Amino acid sequence: MKTDERILHFFAEHEGEYLSGETLAKNLDISRAAVWKVIKKLTEQGHTIDSQHHVGYRYQSGKVLSVPMIKQLAHSDWQIKLFDVIDSTNTYAKEALTRGDVTKPTMIIANQQIGGRGRLGRTFVSPADTGLYISLALPLPVGTSVIPGLLTTGTAVAVSRAIKETIGIELDFKWVNDLLFKNYKVGGILTEAVMDFESQQVSAIVVGIGLNLQKPQNLDATLKNKVGGMVEHLTVSRNVIVAALLDEFVKLYAEYTDGSFLTAYRQRNIVINQTVTVKYGKELVTGIAKAIDEQGQLLVDTGDVIRTINSGEVLKVQLPNNSYHG
Amino acid sequence: MSLNIDEIRSLMTDLENSSLREFKINDGDFSLHLSKNDQATIVNTPAAPVQTQVQEPSTISEIEEHPLAKPVKVGTEIVAPMVGTVYLQPKPDAPMFKAVGDKVSVGETVAVIEAMKLMTEIHSDVAGTVSEILVENEEVVDYNKPLYVIISD
Image 1 (tube, rainbow over the protein chains, first blue to last red):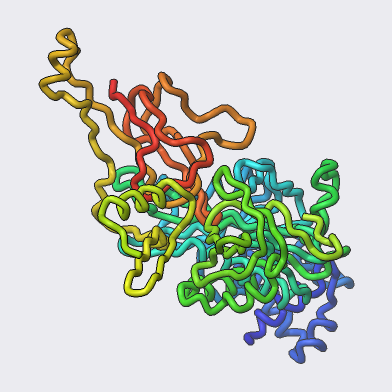
Image 2 (image 1 turned 30 degrees about the horizontal axis):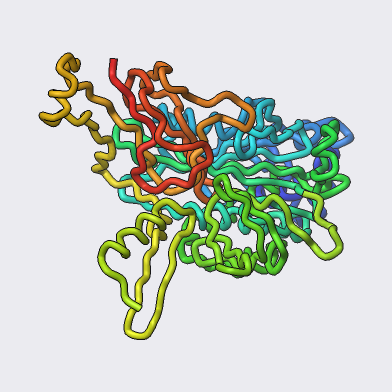
């Protein structure tokens, strides 16, 4: 790792703290003159580094998302767009793709969403500073194929890998795309397609990821008992998490069609071998969730037949000790 | 067990109208496998004429029955571009996107189709008036299934 990257990592690990030139020099095993030179270079690149005489350097103030920091930490060179407040990153991505403003895979991040959405127009509470609201805008060159069932489930696995690497916890999944921690919902994925008007073909995909790193405050009564957070106090920089997420997603997007991630998806899916009720179209299907097939579809044994469910959602999971809250 | 062509046709219709994706019969020498599981992949292909023109029937007998019939009206179907659950309202409890008789403009959202949590907004590519709604809310639809008939202005 280059010296500037190492300094950024060190800043990311000590977010909000002032670090003296001596501390930096000692920890990174470089001279104080080298520290000064790198800080100067980073500032020129657009990083905001506060320096106070006799105190030291502080990267940004508080828990600020920063594009230069994410770019520095991530290996992928995808474009990144950052908003402090936005209606919904998915809506923005869809509009930008439709207008033709986004022609390369792009990550759109917001610190806060005021119109965050889940499935079917449901609200996804997206307060500032405690979560991550990300959309991956993916234009599809003509001839590209997408397997939605695998992209949605694969994204869940990519997110869980990034969270494992950075926060150190293991997320569980609820088919199709709910992310759970200790039986509370801590995130969701909303994948949307953009249709080209003229050809009536899917011309782009938007993968939206909403994560509650900490439990959102002021939830209404129905959500309060379902929604949770991943950590009590956020000690990892969100920039580090975003960078890991970008890298994991880029890796997945290159190879998801082979379905190799499905093993991990099945292992940590809470519905397997449980009695579930699935809303499929207008029907309610109750049975035992037997498996998740090679296309990410849910196979439900109703006693008479095995039903293959490829849309809809699991309304109810009957876990033995009734521990699931979502 | 064996089935004649009409019985097989009738089974195909049943499958078409049910939410079952596939089924298989094996009985001695006889085996039959019907499946609708072929649309799991969405390909962005260059040519895609999915829009079809519907002409109201204009057989001789009909013209005799309706001597004052207006010139044949042409409706345009808006079809499902993929397999999935079709939603005719933006969210539960919200009003339907369109009712019969409503005006539709080009680009307006008329439905959302969901497959594996891939939500696709369906936009009208014609302007006109909704003359028919051919699916029910939350019906599971197949590729190319007509959703609406729009009479152009």
